[in-house]
Amino acid sequence: MSNYIIEVEDLVKIYKTGNIKAIDNLNLRIKRGEIYALIGANGSGKTTTINVLTGALYPTSGKVRLLDYIVPKDRKKTANFIGIAPQEYSLYNELTLEENVRFFSLLYGQSKSYFKERLDHLLTILSLHEKRKTVVKNLSGGMKRRVSIACALIHDPIILFFDEATVGIDPVQRKFFWNYFRSLVKELEKTIILTSHVMDEAERADRIGLMRKGKLIEEGIPSELKDKYHTSTIEEIFIKLSDVEESK
Image: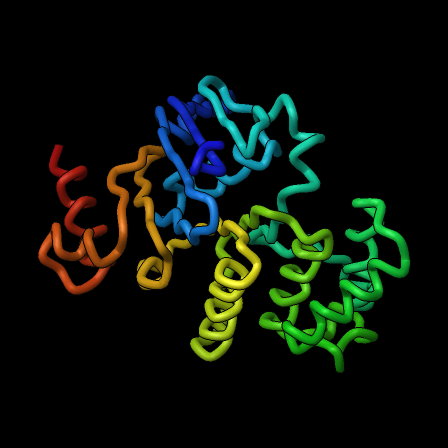
């Protein structure tokens, strides 16, 4: 069995409208049980990459293997193994917190008894019990983000994709989310792939990949990358590499 849970080979995605190459010959391997942060400026190709990996978008060319399946050909089979919390909330504002999570539970064919047990578990961990009957439109941004994560986790997936997971979240909430992400990996052996344009997010990940114009321009363990480029932050590395690219 491969030590890599996701393997990407020569991936290209071109949007026909505007002939935009959103992903440019991307090669990527993500290990089982790690937090991998895909970072870069807005428009660098992070979200498109996540959408291709999850089967939401078809690649123009290249190969994607997730577990032992080929994406998007086997996306119906991979659906039960992945959870997705998109950048934009995919929640129903007029439904309660519990009703929103129940909707996603029904998509995965869960029984009422399993849903109740799983929901109680998630609401406890995410500190949402008191809000379970609250209509989503009346929740704060941080609470909505927690509901989105509960929806992504209701079927107990192996691989989690978080697109801009902490966007618009204050530092206290961000610390909570990262502690939770770490517990998912350490205690439950999940694999987490997240995107961010906030460079200090990368400091908390096991490995990072820096994207620019659809390309992976650097990859590695945060501490080793900082040593390599003689900097104290990942942001400094990104600025250095951006300056190099701009000068070409």
